[in-house]
Length: 421
Image (cartoon, rainbow, N blue to C red):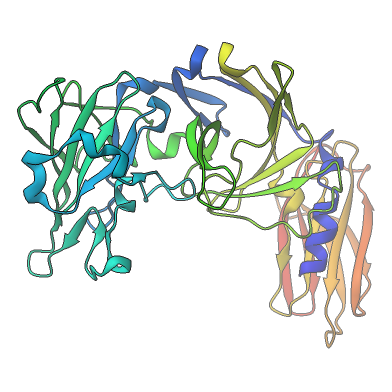
């Protein structure tokens, strides 16, 4: 199976002329004022004002929780205390001694607040970062007091007091001399049922709809903090791409080789990340030969390369992408014989079938082409010995349209839709 994948994928780069490549673009606006969500299948961009929210609360399940700070707004999160009784005595003069917390850049469900110290590693076996699980009530009770520092000099203390199908929060704002009155709110998981997160703005005390429905975006162009050296010594704000939690992404530097036989699909949401560009001499240079293969749960695969990046002046990013699912598809029979076909669609009515016959299999193999009405219009017997093969089919005698290509291997068979243009 691996050998056939290698052969098919090596040819993907060469299929770009035949595949329908789409030119896409998003705009984060001047100064990266917006977050830009993009859906590849529909070439749709949805923008949200980055400064409109402070905290995002994961809402996908009563048993899944997470709270992320708004990196693009530049809010810093500090862990002030793990004793809720300290709420009234939080002293900003101690901020230099408090650990700063960051969102995970690899997993949506782990935000800055979830990275607090109230956890099993620090001797709290039922701890979940910011709170402790109650086995009797099945609630998570808040234990950690946080202080949020804004770029304009505003400070707020904040707690998630309880989680059970939603987040009961408490916060207060520093007025320069003392803490203001406590504010409370419950962000329910039941609101915005098609979204991954619910968002809250502490300044207005209100929920904000930020992201589109989960099914309506694949990529988020935004600013986020990255572990710049990879050793935890420096978190640094970057502008890049985070992908939807249901996707997997593999990357391949095709200036080195178009051989993608060793592609590894990653779930880390920053697999695309920020390093597809470099800054030098007052402008950005984009690595146009770094290809990103984006895989969906239904095994659809898109290939994406970046074209331009205009930086903070406009926040505009342009890129090219194409659906390469057919070019990368293979099928394995019950006898472990596997095959694939490319290009598909074919624009010259010539296609190549690649197939892999493992050791111990000795059967007659045939390739047939049928109309969608079931009429056989092409038939060919192919090699039956162990090995890795390819054979070219000249189907120029057939009219353009949709056909079914069938490979028969002994008692097993597989069928693929074939488009001739």
